[in-house]
Image (cartoon, rainbow, N blue to C red; front, side, top):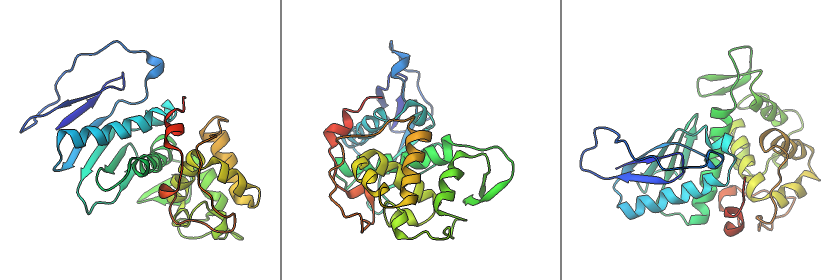
Length: 256
């Protein structure tokens, strides 16, 4: 199956036994201000048309509530129907989402986490100047990459914390894995758990810096309200922010 997303954000699917080329689809009238993404979508594994459509519509709904300049960095989406696959994977301009064994709430959160990676490694780019000690695989991060301003709050390198940084300097335990997971988890936490994040920022200087970074550099001053339903202590950290409680209906009513 090949699915093409036109500038309307409407999803079109073409089903055939062997697909050898993309077909031209009729272009509908659209409002350019509503443009969020134009991505090529593919499928891994066996899936019915209904299952693929449901998964893709969940992804599309999620992308629609994120800033257009961020989702425009996403060029390829892979729908994965393999039970042993990881829930999500992303980097550069590509995202893979497992479409099985997740609630809509969890899948939505996973998509946002993976979009954090796309923003980090796809949208925010430096030029080939001096590197700053972080590496995305074999690719160095350069001094003029805005992401580096976030990384250096907690990290000296991919594997070493700044002096004084502790587990409480991160929104989740998973965020402490490396600078890139720190960015993606914090991106998700800023959107889904803004109330909790603002409370954490009052008791931890590094988290206050991270909140201000996302508010001012990534979300243009916008703060998220009435979405967070996570009731956690300021003195403990959950492992993974994608499974924490939030209000999906309020999230999907967010307008950029």
